[in-house]
Length: 525
Image (cartoon, rainbow, N blue to C red):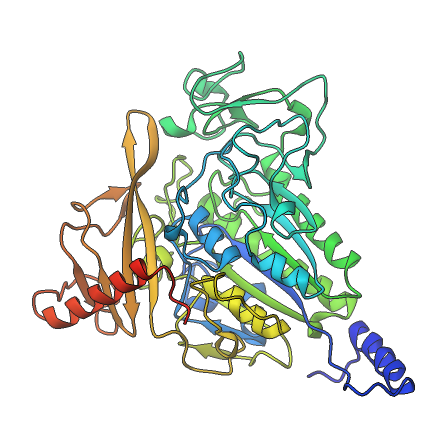
């Protein structure tokens, strides 16, 4: 622990003195740390220079890793965003719940009010709980009135405050919500949203390609907002629509303000950033700076934002009182609907590092993600951990940190990996379940086929359950096959040599293990 006295420690010293004056029998317990969870969007294992990238330099994230622990075997719960976010916040694998595919922007709330969640648990432990950034877990009960009070939503599952996007950058409505209402909405210009039928008379990417800043595929050629075609149609809300180039600055300002307002007591901030998800529209400060097009530029923008947040913690004197967890919701994707030259300008950059494929894939590139924890004096500095960990474990691990018990019927897949997350244990899980849903294109519509693809990792062994014929989506090999596949990741990190026939006993053992976890309804003892 650094010698400098932080603002929190001054307050704690005063509290301890009061305790001593009143001669209370119980010893004074140090206050719990602030928790800052930074969740990137589509960032790959190989996208950061501290993970081996050479064409991109990410000095602020490199510094975070140098001050904390960097994980080489961390996983998102799914190879796509909505399921990963569901598992992170609930401690349940998303495939246990219905409807946990990539959601449209008008989908109903996926996490019902009253369900046990990470923010609800921390709120019970005395934390202020805030969300800034991407939500994408549904809103309302099936019909959302974008012009009135929007509920249920984040405030109904444990967050005290929310400033968030309903879904993704490429989906309507392209507006921000603060707590329960759209920000800057003009009542005289009401919002309407439709994902099936064109509404209003505003231009679309399909009919007015001359109005686009960047061309998109058929799925991303509906409503045009800020010169970018989106998924879905919307009318109204012109004053409320975001400008993509300024959005990250706005979200960063809200996150910074939240930290400043809660600096004197424990807070949990879930800062769900957009980078490098499509459409990639970096601020002019970063445009063209990476030499790798908009995708590389937005990664530089992400790195800068992390630097701004850590500088804020330092300036407020609370860096030593704050646990930072940084990771990504799934693996990387270069082309994802927009012709932004991410593929052409990637060169020899490997966004998934040594692992195969990326977003949407059941291969390692789909869920093996960068992850860094930092808490000066508590998380081991400069540590590189090989512990197998998963974001679904944050609920149980943070519950252990703050001393909150977990009822048996909640967070059924979340394991206490606190020692591993703090860099104090080399071993993590003995297994993890990887998950994706098969995406298919029908005409101009891209959607989930409904088929869930599961795999089990145990040590260096990985079994992918047989599902359907080999499939690709947006250039990524998904990893499907009519029969089970077995890989030895120690010798074959690229998952190229299927050992099922050669090691049939091991394959059957892993398949049976996966079946037990799926049918058992839980994996937490």
